[in-house]
Amino acid sequence: MTESSINNRLSDVLNSILCPVAGCWPLHGVHSEYYYDADAESHVLEVWPIGVEEPKVHGGNGHHEPEPDLLYELAEFDFTDLAKEISIEHFHFSQMRSIFEIGWQEDNVQMELRVHIVPAEADED
Image 1: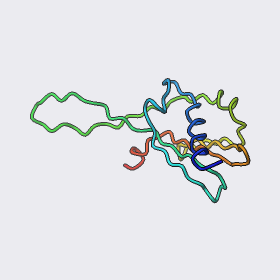
Image 2: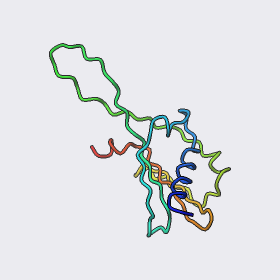
Image 3: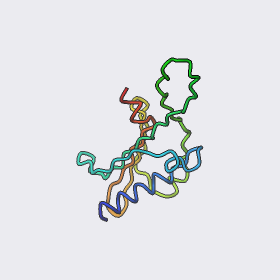
């Protein structure tokens, strides 16, 4: 498998993870990074949801508009279909890091999704 085909496969598996908002990954967007983790000997797709700024109507009272709030939803993820699609070797959720780590092997290639549930923008504050 080429790096491009591995990255595409990881993206396909990510898109198979359902959440309450239909098509949440393509609809709301994600920031993703593909890389090879030599320590884990695994090809990794690490993803963060995109924070959405809620538009506010400003009353025009002479004061400056407040900074926009960063919004994101903590969705309830459904991994039922994922388990039917791939043979999961490890599945871990870290509450401290707010991340799911899902690993499996295909065609002698170790793959892993690292799915953050808090947007990168919110982590940086």
